[in-house]
Length: 127
Image (cartoon, rainbow, N blue to C red; front, side):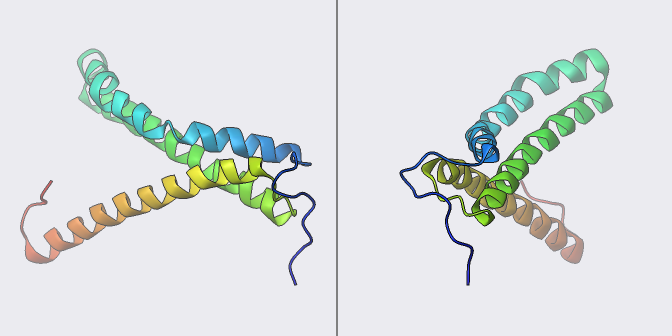
C-alpha cells in the first residue's frame, strides 16, 4: 500500500524541504498582486523607456517567474508528501500552490479555447 507517514498533522515537519515548500506556497499567494503591479506600472514604464518589444519581454519574464514559483511550491510539497510528511506545514504550502495551479489552468484553457474558436469561425478574439 502507501508509504507510512513519518509525521502527523500536529507535528513539526521532519524534512527541511517541507519548510521550503511551505514558504514557496505562501509566496505563490502573492503571484496575482505581482502580476497586477507588473501590468499596471512596470510594463508601461518599460514600454516608455525600453521600447514596446522589450517591455513585453520584461512582462513575460515576470509572468514566467511567477508561474514557476507556484510549480516549484507544488513539486516541493508533493516530494514531502511522498516521503511520508503529513504535518500542517506541508498542507499550508500545498493548498495555495494547488489553487494557483487550478487558476492558471482555467486561465490558459480559456485563452486556448478563445483562440481555437476564433480560428475556426474566422472572427477576431473577444476579450
